[in-house]
Amino acid sequence: MQELSRKPYLIRALHEWCTDNGYTPYIVVTVDKNTIVPPAHVHDGQITLNISTLATNRLVLGNEYIEFQTRFGGVTEQIYVPVAAVSAIYARETGAGMGFEVAPSEPYPGGDATDGRGSVQAPGAGDDTPDDPPPTRPRLTVVK
Image 1 (cartoon, one colour):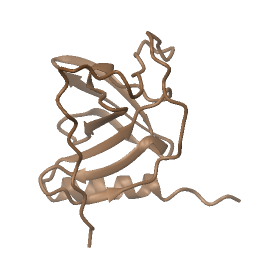
Image 2: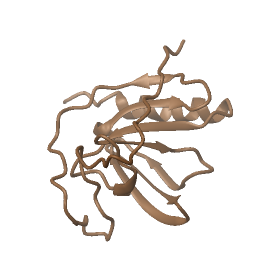
Image 3: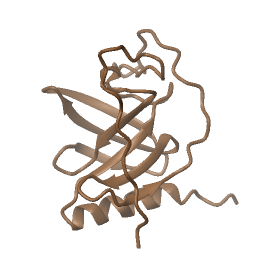
Image 4: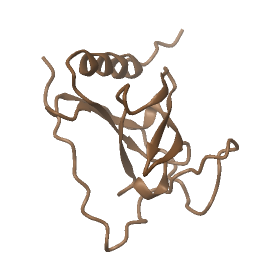
């Protein structure tokens, strides 16, 4: 029997730790063809998502995927993120968290495509325009 990945368990544990301490848990996701997020919020092939209980509805932190509803600019969006695409989880207020390796995957080729549930899949890297601000990287610190 193949051992299960520790990654989804660590994500759930750090989400709970952030929540218990009054921090806001954020995840950094490498967007690929299996990731369903609003394309306008993807920068350099990544998106950072607030996964706090106040910012999400129907949050599922599963072993294979993270799924929830949230609002972007007043519009409700269905988010679907494979756990394998999560590169970090951290507390917004302190930067404390954990980074993860992301296995290389096929980037989303672009264009308008849906996942069969009506959600638009986000394009991969390379769709930045000159007006986009430079992306900020989260500061991760060692959790003791």
